[in-house]
Length: 291
Ligand code: PZK
Image (cartoon, rainbow, N blue to C red):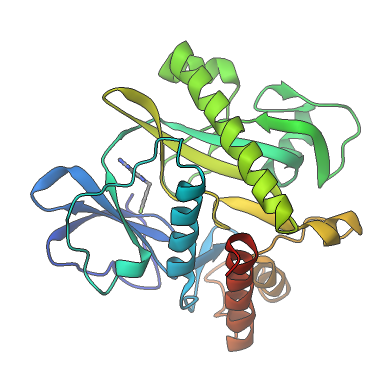
């Protein structure tokens, strides 16, 4: 997980030892507790594989609140939240989750209701995504007849995950666990999509991660159903033909596309782009959770 950020180093936290950082999150060991981890969502924002400057103040707290809200809504699905009385430092309290340390499955459990992004690219080349054969003639942003499970093998930091067929998941985790991951992923997706629909949102796709612990081979981990792990689209805009306008980072992506050729360090985002993006994150959470 060695991955540098222009945003600087990971916040030092007394009583916790940094284990590594992703583009937008930091993971800590809890000193003296080898069964727990602290997962901290930063305010960093990434687009086109780059971490951008400046950070979006409040983003980490919003996405952490959203993950907690989804865990509540999906209370019958085992998740990794720990209830141990470990004091979380004030500096990260509202963007941190204390979690049980699981044995993570090396599979990204992606569910898609829409063909877009890397899935659409694969479909164009092969007619399938992760080995799931799809109808001929789909275009970018088309709704599928039903959500599909399109797993990917977790790449090292900085590499792109590789879509894999279900058979490969079976080889990686065994047939019983593979089926559990697939069925649980589809169940979570369908229920979340129904909740999103009530809020006027189309849940286009999501990426879930699971780990195993004694007695339960498929515990939901990581952040769930946030705008960093999922594409939420405005249902009305989608119906009106304005497809592929994702609810969160579209403003950042559009601005970057117009101001960066993808080489070298990306330019800093103007304050206005940062402010509008922050508004968009807030609006998503408000619409989903009712404020
Ligand atoms: C775990 N990551 C992703 C990478 C981050 C996070 N409950 C868990 N048990 C064991 N391992 C993990 C989890 C969770 N969630 C998650 N890597 C390991 C990751 C980089 C930075 F903050």
